[in-house]
Length: 229
Image 1 (tube, helix red, strand yellow):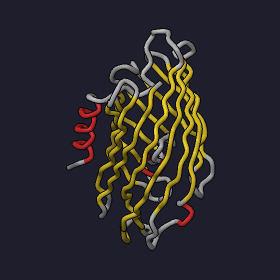
Image 2: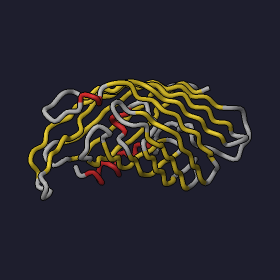
Image 3: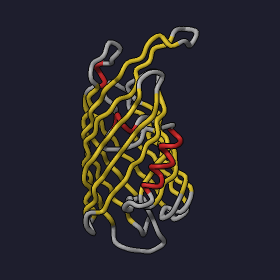
């Protein structure tokens, strides 16, 4: 299945899932809190090229993620503050970067209006310099909208890549991701970030990545729980 076919399927799936905390309306209410924890694993492609851009070789770069995220959204001020952290591990291959194993973390402060949202912060990756995080939403947060993230602040750092763009809903986010942070040569996959309600305050979180590389099929799966207050 091609990446754009996968993206279309997971966007339809996202339409059926539970609201994410960045969905903002004009209603004035109490401060909302969410706490989520997730674990995931998957494969990115580790590809090597010569000076002319010809493929020398490619192998699977396997990873495991575990992390947590806390979010606060104040509907009155439209302030949205997020903190995330955890650990990621990249399995060794001949072209691996040992420093890709370790702790990650970051924070983001955003303004969430009804028809637009913008924010930024800092994200630290294992063996890498601290990088800026950028978040942009154009469109109604309770319905379909354009969304872009640079250095996404997530519970599954290796799986999220360094850039995500796509269609967001109050009920999910799906599109394309570019990564991973630990490879010089990066790839693109389709992805979805979903939340399935178990009760009024508890959701099951699911994440999926999928897409072909030069020689290795890339995939990722993640699952966890989210508590809403």
